[in-house]
Image (tube, rainbow, N blue to C red; front, side):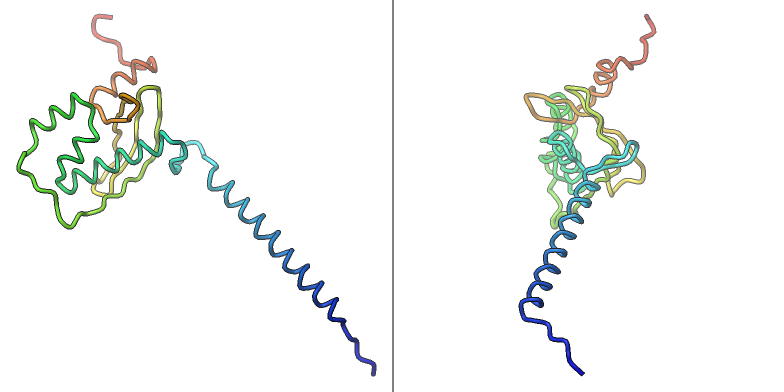
Length: 165
């Protein structure tokens, strides 16, 4: 019986071809994963993908971390000037931040921007229900503002009619 001998060159060629096939398959998988990770499905929560969405996500997360950890300075830093002044008047000036800090996560359901306002539909891990916070861009920075909801509705043309209308 004559044995079939595979030359060293053939084996090396097969290994190189197999390696190239693995590289091509991994590249295709990476491309597919990247495409799926950045696809936004209407009505579903998605990761922050724009700089504004990332900043608004950080803003609301920092706010809730300040609230949970009794960190008045952190809470105040997330508020527009009028709300910050009111917060500082009403908050306990002797409050001491919690140590060790508890990390709050925030599930962002939707961020809607109507310049210079934004609505952030979110549920912090310390809450039991979803809520919407409103922010306003002031001097290039997003800040939480109590009056931003009405101002945003006005900008969208969805503000309720006043009784005198």
